[in-house]
Amino acid sequence: MSAIIRQATIHDLEKIAPLFDAYRQFYRQPADVDLARRFLRERFAHHESVILLALDAGDAAIGFTQLYPLFSSVRATRKYLLNDLFVAPSARRKGIAANLLAAAAEFARANGAASLSLTTAVDNLPAQKLYESLAWQRDEGFYEYNLQTRIERP
Image (cartoon, rainbow, N blue to C red; front, side):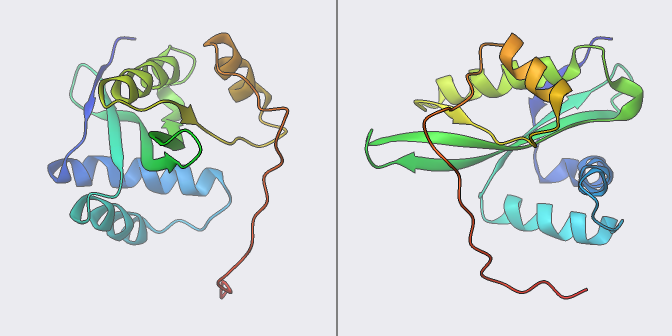
């Protein structure tokens, strides 16, 4: 399956929102397309992320990746966090995720970023296999820590 991958704009919000909602559901969040739409609208409005969108031949959204800009103080340079990557179930195992990752790498290079980073679940073996096949390297030298600063209400 071939796909067109391009940077999304606010005009793509209605195409991306259902995919973003499905992505959140994959991570055991309740379905809430309105929440997905609001979250994405805020990212577009404040220029806080870059979304690369995969479209099929009929212009339907079949996948996306979302990049957040970061900076490395030690390296004194820009980098990006590849925070979200999702491909619709009907489009999986057709190279779309690999194409999105390649587009993210090209975007980062074109914008002078020194690196891309991502985090995936320890048991997400298919994703790990894909990343490693595309020359992503697992960080064996650092631990990641998180601090919950907001109490989530059920």
